[in-house]
Length: 264
Length: 127
Image 1 (cartoon, rainbow over the protein chains, first blue to last red):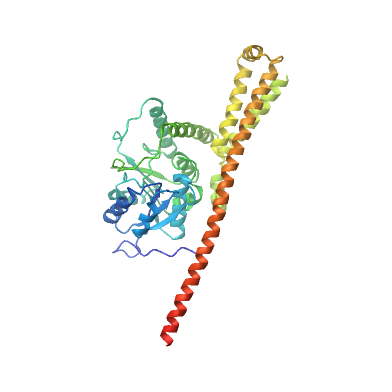
Image 2: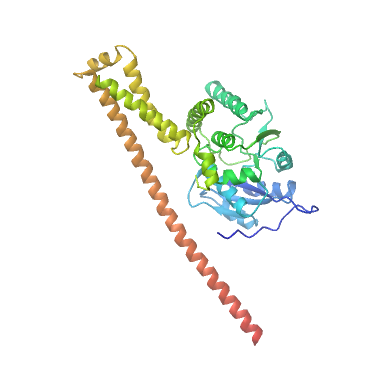
């Protein structure tokens, strides 16, 4: 399989510049995508951009192409996990050292990209977490308990403090790119909790750094209460099953499949 | 007791399903109904008097019949879920086939156009 042509942007002034790709999964983000790309070009210069269009029905792709960034057009909606996985595989084939995941709705400031990339010096995956206590919405009751429970257990299995388990602002180093380009789950919101469990199983180190985030700039978020409830139920189930495995290890195919090179 | 055997079989099936989910060979959404089946049957079997009482109330002659009816109903639901998912997969597969065909055409047309442009440039230089 021939490699993709190498993009020519690289950070100036260094002998062997680190090549960084920002993957922007986008679903109907024609309002926000131009702003996000401009933000990256201004505040994280030298970062290549790949917009992964997840079956948008609006002008997201046209706008992205007109700005001269690379675009992957999924033939139908595959979800954030599938979109990010495609972006990771693109990054892997083109030989990027770092792949970032950023939301296309403007919530993730490009000024924080430097901090995320710097964090990869000591981890395979760096998660940008909202400052603890500074949420943009209040969670109450069962959702809050479930989210806290998830954060606590993810923190325990990775032996580091993880408070923002569902953050889509992440940096992946070369090993993580290699693993997750094949293993990133595509189910709805499986790209967060399950991805963390897979990271643990395949021996990736995960760290969190606090980042400033903005409110969503425009358009409609792709969440609704029913989906959120389903997510939490699934997350608890997956987590419950994983905890059982962590207590009494079951042979996992995830790590074996990675070694064998099987796609998920 | 035939009821007990049925429950043991269900428990084994659920353990197998959970193992497959943990090994990531089964998506969680498929495990959901299997777990629901197991829970329903185990509740009926474990809570004393629930099965005979409910069976009597619903008009079953033998309590075991209620157990089997519940299991059958849930298994039908699982079949329906699978049919639904297969429909979805088939649609997406056909969509992918179209994309492959379109990509091939696009590649070939691009190559043909490049060839034409190259030939034209060479001719222009020679003349």
